[in-house]
Image (cartoon, rainbow, N blue to C red; front, top):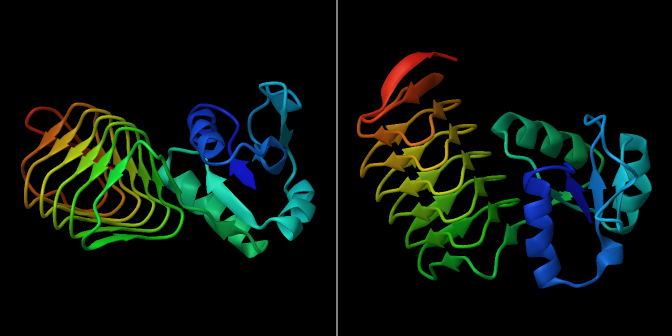
Length: 210
């Protein structure tokens, strides 16, 4: 399979994948943006730098995982690789806790170590739930949302598509956050946020449109 991205979060994702399967020969990285990469990662995982080179790999194993944080890049690369016939893989750390009642996890979701997903929760396509996050009961998270490490989403929250939530942010119960928003690190969101807003602070305030 192919991990999209060869820096930062992609290396953390690799650790989860290796704990689920020890077959190193099955894992490749793709990065056609970074200029300072060698030919492999950690001396053993090939880095592919051209989309053309991925085609023969996808023909043998169509699965790819998103080693990127940005909601926009996660969506863009999903569209690109699905067009080539790729299948977006869901990756859940064995050290995450996922409820067994009413939890719907869509294609391509990544849930990392220490995170807790409770009950009656819907998580959209391509969502990243990074390290040590919590998602409370009856919440719905839209497609390609990024929850950075330590985000806490309370019960009955709604988060729109393509929204990025910074590290340590807290979303209080019953809050509605729109599409394409950015929630600053450490913010406490206690009021609804419309689409396309940057919010920062305790309590979180709208800073500007984005």
